[in-house]
Image (cartoon, rainbow, N blue to C red):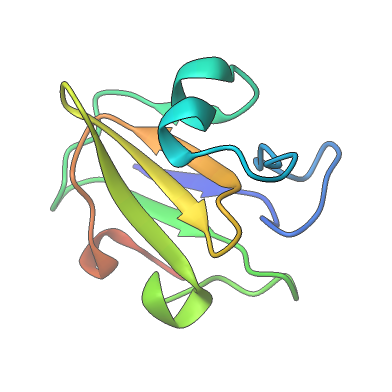
Length: 102
């Protein structure tokens, strides 16, 4: 199963991003927001995630795309941009091997 997420640099119907208004910590963004997509029951090794970059192409690396996967505790992870915007949340630790371009 592949989860496809929209362009993380824009807003609107094709975006899955929750913009940080400025200066809000990652923890506070995670606790205080409900504006981001959340993937549940993700099975690493079986399921894949397709995330489109700022030009509409699927990414192949979190780091190369200036994204980080942060453990927020209690089995929850958030994917952040370099400016602490939330791209999406997930219930599993994910790595580049969980990404797909298909």
